[in-house]
Length: 167
Image (cartoon, rainbow, N blue to C red; front, side):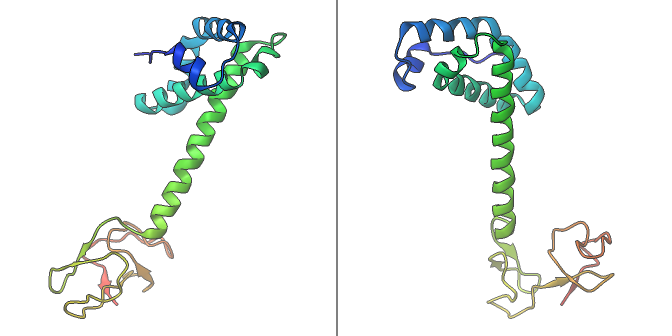
């Protein structure tokens, strides 16, 4: 389903100053909204992400109306598709950074100590309750691994949670 538009919000919130700009935007939207939405769906692969991408595209388009109007000699569809592609790249970049930050922090939430069963914050080397060593090692190479990893990042060996040794 295609997201709707709120033209008056565009006019007031994003600095559309002239009726001529608004008319140009309306014409662009009427002619290309279905194409833009389909392209956003193809890039995003997920309906919710596609709707976000669709909305971001039209927000960027309305903010850049003077630039968009200057492209009258070229195909406005190309201009809009470029906005969709750039918005998608920006979204992917943000997700990649978010994953890196979350990965650096480790798992979200506490882990259970295999010795006493108490909750221990992620990243602790020892259980503060029973003193058990919480570091795990790969059975193939002996390097440190996390308990939820399926493969060792050092040697590539598959890791069965039952095989992981405590250091």
